[in-house]
Length: 213
Image (cartoon, rainbow, N blue to C red; front, top):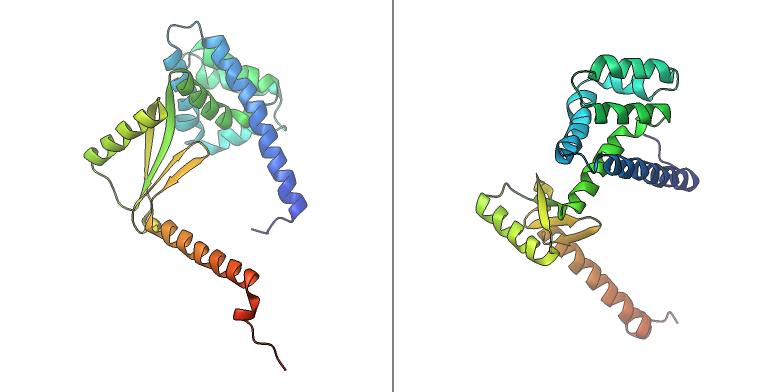
């Protein structure tokens, strides 16, 4: 893949931010419309399953729903054929709303934000727990208990194994990262040594350089 120049990278970043802002509006609208439903949890899970069980299994369908070459009317007909009698009327209606506004391409992002916002409303918070090796239930439960205490929320743990960590663990909560891996500790030590040496050179350059006569 070709490297993006600074202007292209900036454009892509702006596009990503804009898409997330738009997707967040639709996610909030979905939750607002479903707020009075007795099965709100089920509707949130159902929207996620549209991505996990349908789009993931049928990528060609996803491309069809995203493309501007297929009319909105035909997309709605396709949604009816696939989901009528299988999906709830709330979820099917929401998919059609996305279609009418040309936003089916954001469905994955919308579904992810719906789950995230709903979890926040329920006092839950997503946590990514990355370790160098698989962890047992005892350690997992200990981590959950400590996070519950420090975050004042119910952590929803997603465990991932990454041998590149060498040892230790990395916990990510939103934009915050708690890193206890050996690799990162070594990198921090290396950077501290470089910083210290640089400061010493700046303050007393005569100690490090011999003038050429």
